[in-house]
Every structure is written in structure tokens, then in C-alpha cells.
Length: 363
Ligand SMILES: *[C@@H]1O[C@H](CO)[C@@H](O)[C@H](O)[C@H]1NC(C)=O
Ligand SMILES: *[C@@H]1O[C@H](CO)[C@@H](O)[C@H](O)[C@H]1NC(C)=O
Ligand SMILES: *[C@@H]1O[C@H](CO)[C@@H](O)[C@H](O)[C@H]1NC(C)=O
Ligand SMILES: *[C@@H]1O[C@H](CO)[C@@H](O)[C@H](O)[C@H]1NC(C)=O
Ligand SMILES: *[C@@H]1O[C@H](CO)[C@@H](O)[C@H](O)[C@H]1NC(C)=O
Image 1: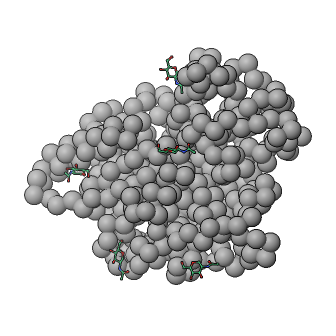
Image 2: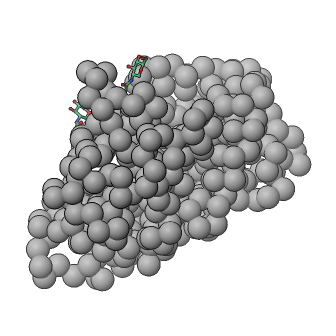
């Protein structure tokens, strides 16, 4: 899977060079790890926002959060897009040196979805639920929402540790693991929530997380704290600038048709499904367009902390840890805006009024 994604990214860049007719262009390599291709990433990749910043971005689909963030800390990834609970956990429990550059979304279409014969949350009693890690953000969300329905972890249900959302979606679709073990339900997000609804029969949505926890800070842009500096021309700053410009493009309704075409091309889905993905990505309550210039929502971050706290997820931080102080943005802190601010200084925006040339040439 890793080499496949890498190959895909290389193909994009080479065809982009044809389009721009600039074979002499020198591109800086940049390595991005993420669980899924967000709509903002699809727009950035398909519409040449990375190329505008002279970047050759290699996109790695990460298999699980442990791998994603240990690789980031080891220098294997330059940036990881993943749920904010991971940096919160690693920073506050383990004092790991990573920082959040900004907030991408508000919990992208996060739902609890089940196999077709599971009709409600209460049907999950006595079942095992699929998770990435039993001690990470989405497992804590599951525990919170199930406890609001009177179901307690350990007593009423257990966890199956499976991995990231693409593998959980596939297992849910199959109804079992490769060894025949039955599966029942899991958390899904963009773009899989729409894909689950498009199946025949559709996979039922048992609960929508934004009905229980909102605002919620899901996807964060995370980096090693050491790479947070004010040099305006680093590949990191330029990558964030490309993502910021792509995010503004996505948020502008006049670009709807072009953004939808970019999503269709990047995800390889038919137009009707891409339209539903666009609607999901631009939903003001859960999508990717409400955090202007990736500003972190304080209440959204506090909800991440509170949900982890409900599952006793701060044993490393200890009972006297000052969360209110620790979430104040600052140089070297959990929230460090220096890269974001430098990126805003070199933004190269565009509009579909100037055309919609997709790099992949599809759609
Ligand atoms: C982009 O990066 C990949 C992987 O690091 C590399 O193999 C490829 O040659 C690069 N392409 C360009 C056009 O720089
Ligand atoms: C995470 O992925 C890595 C790399 O594929 C794998 O070695 C590891 O066992 C996985 N960890 C979990 C908890 O699934
Ligand atoms: C956390 O790490 C920083 C350096 O990254 C260090 O200065 C500080 O003392 C550490 N705090 C604890 C409690 O270990
Ligand atoms: C799902 O089923 C397909 C075909 O039967 C199989 O190739 C694949 O490995 C299965 N995936 C999972 C995650 O069980
Ligand atoms: C700034 O960050 C880049 C990596 O993004 C690093 O190469 C450079 O040494 C850093 N500069 C300073 C002054 O820390």
C-alpha cells in the first residue's frame, strides 16, 4: 500500500510537469503521512497547489496512529495529518516534542457505522467493536457515545484492534476479518461515510458523533516541534501554504464544480459520490471549511481533552496537569502558529474562474 501511494504521487508530479511545460522546474521533496486523503489534500494535489510551491509531495497512507506519530518523531515524515488526540496524548502524557500547526476540520463525517443487521447502538451489547488503537481518540469517542446510551466498555462490549479506517471499512463491508472472525461496527470518517451509504445494502449509521460532541477538533497538522521555525521558505512552510490555499479554494462555493471534480479524480469515485463527498467536506459543523486559515478552536480542543479524560486517558500527565495553560498557543507549545503564519505570508491562491485543469486528467 505504501509503495502504491508513493507511485501515485510520482505519477501526479510528472504529468503536472507536462501540464506546466516546465521540465527545468526543481521540486523539493516532502513527505506527508495521513490516514485518508482529505478534500483539502485532493484539491491541493489535483489542482497543482503543491507544484505552485515547487514541491514534490509524497503521500503515505499510514496503517495506524502509533506508526504515524513515531515515524514523524523519528524524522520519517515531515508532516502528519491525523486526529488531534494523538498530539495531545503524546505531548501531555509522554512529553514528546511535537506541535500542532493548525486545525483542518471539525470531525469529518465521523459516525459509528455497523453491518447491515445492526439496527441501533443498543444492538452492540455483547459485541466487539473495531478500533485503530484501544487508547486513541476514536476509541474514546466510541466509549463516550456508547456510555451515553448506557453501554460500558469491558462490561457491555469489547474492542478488536484492527488498524486505520480503510482496513476497518473493508472488514465492515466484508462482515468479517480474513480469518472469518465476525465484525459488527466501527468509527468511519470522510470519505468512507459516504462510501458506506453508497453500498447496496448501505451500511447503517448508528450515531453521528457531531450529535454528541461538538465542536470537535479531529484532523490536525502535526510536526516535530524542532521544525517549527519562522524561516518562510522551508518545504514545510510551503506545504502548509499549499494546503491553506487549497483549503480557501474548497471553502469558496464558487469553486464547487471544480473542487468536486478534484475530489472525484483523487478518490477515483463517480460524480454522484464525489458530490456527496463535497457536501460532507464543506459541512459547517463537521467539515473542513470552518477553521479559517487553520485556526484552532479552543472549545473543539477542550472537547478532545474532555473525551480522553472521561476514559482516564491522562495517567502520564497526572492529576495536577494544567491543561488550560498547556493549550495556550505559543512558540514551542502544543499549538505553535509560526509555520502557519509564515505560510500565510507566501500564499498562492487561485480560483476556478481561471479554469480547472486537473493534474490526473480524469473527470
Ligand atoms: C518525487 O519524489 C519521489 C519520491 O521521493 C521521487 O522518486 C521522484 O523522482 C520525485 N519526482 C520529481 C519530479 O522530483
Ligand atoms: C502499526 O503498523 C505497523 C507498520 O505496518 C505495524 O508493524 C504495527 O504492528 C501496527 N501496530 C498496531 C498496533 O496495529
Ligand atoms: C519535557 O521536554 C522538554 C524538552 O522538550 C524539557 O525541557 C522538559 O523538562 C520536559 N518535561 C518533563 C516533565 O519531562
Ligand atoms: C475482504 O474480502 C476480500 C474478498 O473476499 C478479501 O480479498 C479481503 O482481504 C477482505 N478484507 C478484509 C479486511 O477482511
Ligand atoms: C528550520 O526548520 C528547518 C526544517 O523545516 C531546519 O532545516 C532548519 O535548520 C530550522 N532552522 C532553525 C533556525 O531552527
